[in-house]
Amino acid sequence: MMKHLSLDRRIQSLFPVALASLLVIGTARLVLDNLKSNHSQIFRLYGWPRGEKHRLPIVLSPKDRIEEKCNVFEGKWVWDNVSYPHYTEESCPFLVKQVTCHRNGRPDSYYKNWRWQPNGCNLPRFDPLKLLQILRGKRLMFVGDSVQRAQFESMVCLVQSVIPEGKKSLRRVPPRKIFKAEEYDVSIEYYWAPFIVESNSDHATNHTVLKRSVKLDSIAKHGKEWEGVDVLVFESYVWWMYKPLINATYGSPYNVKEYNVTTAYRLALETWANWIDSKINPHNQKVFFMSMSPTHLWSWEWKTGSDGNCFNESDPIQGPYWGTGSSLKIMDIVHDILQQLKVNVTLMNITQLSEFRKDAHTSIYGERKGKLLTKEQRSDPKKFADCIHWCLPGVPDTWNEILYAYLLKNYHGFL
Image 1 (spheres, one colour):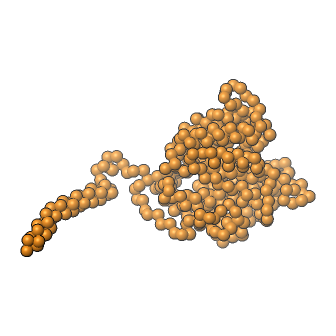
Image 2 (cartoon, helix red, strand yellow):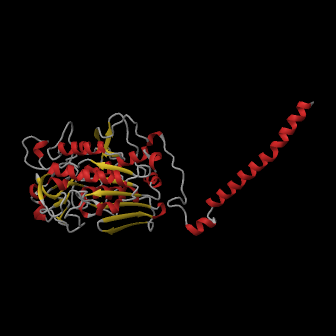
């Protein structure tokens, strides 16, 4: 009997504690529900957290994840005129004339219909809505030269079709281009910095090519524009390769000397690496580095005995191929610098897959000094064909598909 009375008293003593707990939980729930509602006084006064309004859950299926063991940079190009291209020149109003090859007179469009197929796995199908949800309230910035600008334009075209008219915009604020997706509070940007570090070629439109000079230890001016960006994608190669030697300063800004290009490139990348380690927060920022975009300047490299370039090429190269325009020394420098970094930077090794695409350059169907080639210039492709830049839709779309795959893979890790 005494045991039962003791048990009853203990149970009764727990009632106030349980009741108080329920009241606390209930009150907390009411407060949270009020905060989440559109009528919350706090959010009326201070606004919503950036990118949080109307957030929907992002559902990732197994097909959205690339397997850990899969090397997406090894594979082959397969013909796919059903799923590709993702967009057309007509459907994307943000393309510049330099890349709209078909509109500029290229007679074939086969270059648009090749899909990159990694060995032993698949890339997730690009989903613009899913990418915009992942990037909600964030900034994605491409940094580099005109090749990188094409990747920026590709990304804009890949996402813009799902954004309603009046809810998207493109502004030019040299040296930047800024595309805004208003409903998602997403900013996709491009920043002109052909050497990554500072140089006398940093003006977005009025830059010198023949008398280029690089400040190998100066990056602060550019860096101010990169600080706080959520996803940074860097690229720098073609501008370095004009001649074996390059004018540059290191230490004293007044002591201009000739440097071997590979030596200068390493010093510049070390300056960049120091900025990355000192300014990037790996918990909420992600950094990618694009390997070199290949050129196809000499057709004898893939067609023995020929004396042309990329002009009139309509199919990818089949089988092993590496052009002389892609410097293995530069590749080694990139690998060395990235391995020394404290902050993890993902190398987007797009060189080999792009090497196969001799057919996808702008050739005589692009611009030269801001103008489309004249009829006379087009008649001399050996002199005037551009075998550096890429048509859009085209190869840079694949670079962005791979970038998208990595953003999906790392989604819960940094965003």
